[in-house]
Structures are given as structure tokens and as C-alpha cells.
Length: 495
Ligand code: ADP
Image 1 (cartoon, rainbow, N blue to C red):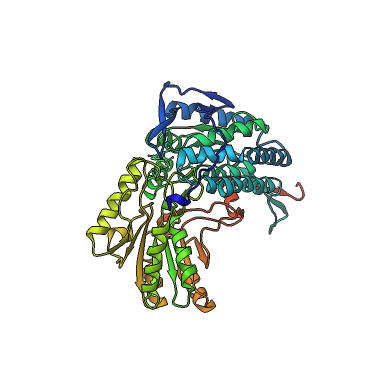
Image 2 (cartoon, rainbow, N blue to C red; image 1 turned 90 degrees about the horizontal axis):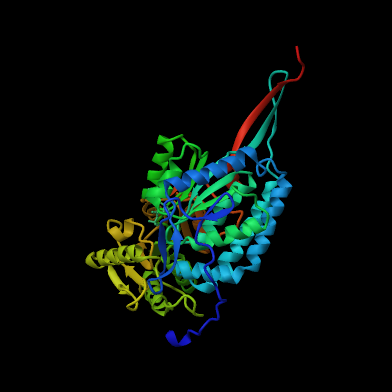
């Protein structure tokens, strides 16, 4: 409740970096244009940021190309690269609270979530990838003929990376970490809603000794800057996180230009399955977290809650009570669990889905409207009696709207859970090991969390089946996205 919310003392934070980062310099855009980035709590302008477009992408790619072809980064010893990445992680750790405040200001997520989980996780990811830098190597292969055969694992070249706004710092780490560990250079296009923290950390990276041109950052919009990067002839690899619709566009742009390999991390409609033997209070809390975390703005949100018919009524009653207790408000205040949605477009879209749910035969248990009269806040909303043919059951809502379905048996729920174009993640809640094994093997999803949700260690691979994407990020699997394999064959004896 509002009374339980105390003022949190946030560190003073200033916006010092608003320009594009090209070849180690903060520069204006070629057009001189800027765009505002807004505070989603108040809808007021935080800062005007240089707006990059195709011309700036050309400049950034040229800088990355030069840094790749002429070095020193790809040719530097892997240990030297690793040391720069570790020093960067130390600097970010020192600026933890300022960075968390900037992230909350630009994105609207609860400050403590940014300060206690996301910035520390960013640091952890860079230490993890720094550890990989000097452990990447090829094989020696026995050949049929009198030949010495070996593989070299080489960096792929200039990586183009396009990231979304829901976890601006973490998406930076998931993309930049493996690319740099493998010795690539980068042009990163941040999301237009959240350009600030990437520029802040990039400055720290240069302080840590990153050579100019290795990491270039272009703030700007998708159809201009993003499309120019995806279709650039001199970009060797593209990594994208965002909506499935835009994923199709960038894949097409990559194919039509130079066939650069593409990794995609896209949307989801992930099932969270609560079996009859589950501890209901725990299941309610976890299902609530799986959906409402980060204002519901997670590609892997547990957005289809399947509950066994024997525990369904109890679940609904408790899930509704939990949602009604969720504290919505200023994300800088202690005790607040849910801040505003990112922008007006998402806010309106979520309200349209809620209207569609109300117009269907689903039951609105609580919420269903905006929260307050200023900012993009939405009431925690729960729909029960949701059926698969409803729009709210099929589309990714990307907001604080929990949809609960009833099921009878395991075979049936596997079929229903898989009956979606997505396959990013799934949650399974049971004490029965046989049920857990049947579900984990039956579900077609890139991650299955059993009796937990949203566990994201640096080493765990993440990615989607079906239209949730291609390729895996994090962990050992992410390295191959940024490496070329060269086979080198040498006769053992010259004729
Ligand atoms: P959302 O709808 O959640 O904003 P998007 O997929 O549109 O998701 O955005 C994710 C990222 O993709 C952002 O950085 C955005 O600017 C970028 N983007 C959007 N449209 C395009 C496009 N046509 N080409 C390349 N990038 C794009």
C-alpha cells in the first residue's frame, strides 16, 4: 500500500553522455538531429540525444572495420583483452548506484531491481566473458591422408547488434560480452526509448583501455539506423533482440544484403504450468513473479498460467489477492514493485489487449485499467477462464496482465502449451519427479524452469524454439555466434 512506501535516497545522477560514440569519440549525428528520451513516470523529457541514421551507421561501421582490420583488438593477446574487460567490470561495479539510477530514470523499472540485480548481473557477465577470452581455441583433427589438420577459431569481424528497451544494460552485456571476448569489433544500435546507460558504460570501457573503434554506439530509430545496420554490406554478423515482427524484417535485410549470419532473440508466450501436487502459496508467488516482473516486459514472461482443475479455484483467489497487493508507483521509492510501462505506444497497446480480454468471455478478476493519471502506469490485471482462441491467449501482451487457464491432465497441457508459434521458455511447478521429467521433455521451449523462474546465470544458454528466435545467447553456446572456423591443412611431408 502507498503508506508502506518510503522515500529511497537515490544517488545524484546526471546525464553526461548523449552523443553517438564513433571511433572512441562522442560526436553529433551527421544530420545534427536529436530526439528526446522520456521519463516514463512523468512523460517529461530527460535529455535530447543525438539521432543516428544511415550516414552515422556508415561512419560507425567504417570505424569498426578499421579497428578490426588494422587492430590492435583482434590481434591483441587474449589475456590483454581479458584484462581490459575485467577492468571495465570493476569500473562498472564502482558506479553501480549511478548506473542503476540512470537505468530506472530512462526505463521506469524499480531502482532496487536495477541496483541489486541488474547492474551486478552486468558486472558478472563481463567477468564471465573475460574468462572466456583466453580459452577459445580450435582442434587438431586426425586426417585420412598424410596431413596435419587443425582448426583456428577466429573472430567473425564487425558485429552489428540491435537491442531492445526492457533490459538496456543486460542486453548490452549479452551482446557485447561474447563479441568482445572473441575479438570482434562492434556497432551497437540501442533502443530509441533507452539510449542513456549504454553510452555511460561505453565511456567507462574506454577508461578501462578499450581501443577506439572497437565499440561504436549509434542511438536512433529502427527503420533508419537499425535497418541501415542490418543491411550494411560491411557488417559480418547481426545479433538482434526484439519483437518477432522486427526479427523477420532484419533477417530479410541481412539476407538481401550480404547474407550475414543472424541470431535472433524474439517474442514469447511462455506457459507456466501448476500441477495438482504443487504448494499453492509458493506457486501463486512464483507465477505472479513470472508474469509481473519488470512490469510484465519480459520476452520470457510466464504469460499463460495453466492451473490444474483441482487447485484452480484456490489459485485464482490467491493470485487475485496477490496482484491486488502489488505495489505500483514511483520506481525510485522503496517498496514499489511495479513502475510505469516504457512508453505511450506500449501503454496503449496493453490497454487495447485488456479491452479485448474484457470483451471476451474471460473473467476480469482485478485491475483492468491505467493506474493514476500521469505516466504509463497500469494496474496489475488478472484474467481467469482464459481460452486458447482468445487474442489475449495468443499474442504477446508485454505488460502486467496475467492470463489463467484450467487443465485436467499432463498430456493435454503439453499439447496446449505447445500450441503456439512461440517457444522461448516454460515453467513447471510440481513435486513429482515423473511429472517434471514428462513436462521438461514434452515442452518445446529454449528454457524450462522447474520450480523456479527467470533464473539467469551467465553460463545458462538462452534462446527460442520456433518463432521465438534462432541461436543461443550466454554461456558457452554464445561464443560460436561470434567465431569463424578456419580449417588449416598442411602435408606432413613435402613431396
Ligand atoms: P518493440 O516493439 O518492443 O520496441 P522492436 O522489435 O520494434 O521491439 O525493437 C527492438 C529493436 O529493434 C529496437 O532497437 C528498435 O529500434 C529496432 N528496430 C525496430 N524496427 C527496426 C527495423 N525495421 N530495422 C532494424 N531495427 C529495428
